Image 1 (cartoon, rainbow, N blue to C red):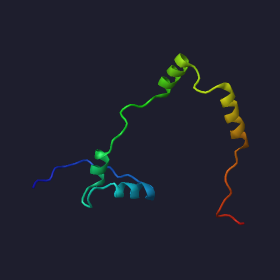
Image 2 (image 1 turned 180 degrees about the vertical axis):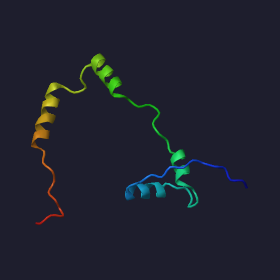
Image 3 (image 1 turned 90 degrees about the vertical axis):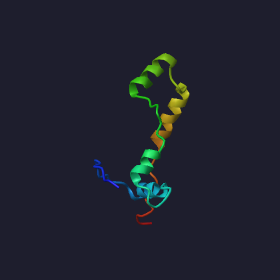
Image 4 (image 1 turned 180 degrees about the horizontal axis):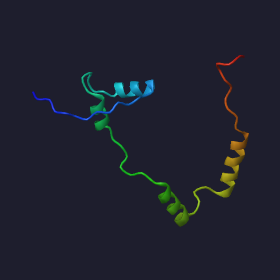
Length: 87
């Protein structure tokens, strides 16, 4: 067996992301690199320029009334109670 030089990068993950990655391994010896390379990533994405072009061509995706209602709800939105704070 011969060893090839491979470039590596160190990354930081949130613990829940690490656990998902670890759980996705097919066998304990499978590396995280192998898990990531096996993953399916969307081939097509949309840029802001493409979104703007579609908006110009097709018009808005929501009716004005819907947008007004969203603004109304956003204005009334409050953060949830702090369950760790004093009762």
